[in-house]
Length: 131
Image (tube, rainbow, N blue to C red):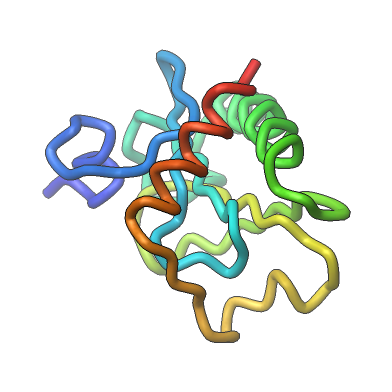
């Protein structure tokens, strides 16, 4: 059965996509820790990130780096943190989280909520600067 991320990749369900190429997609997390919290996902469905090939892992990180730079241009923050957890969806992915403090990437803290308009505007801004 396809994961929720595969359904996003196949456009079966909507997402706030900020970047995409032939192998990867990045979209805003709908339960974010911070404004601009983004998920970067390989299009090939694989449960565990370290079951990806060496090439896929390296390409995922390079793509995530490009996305992180775009987020940082749009969202004021000191850094973009990267986290690999992978327990919530059985599809390899990384979290990119804008950081001002170490506690900004604490996944047990309450998630933020934004309006659909906020997500749309933010996704468009990040997408516009993606290189």
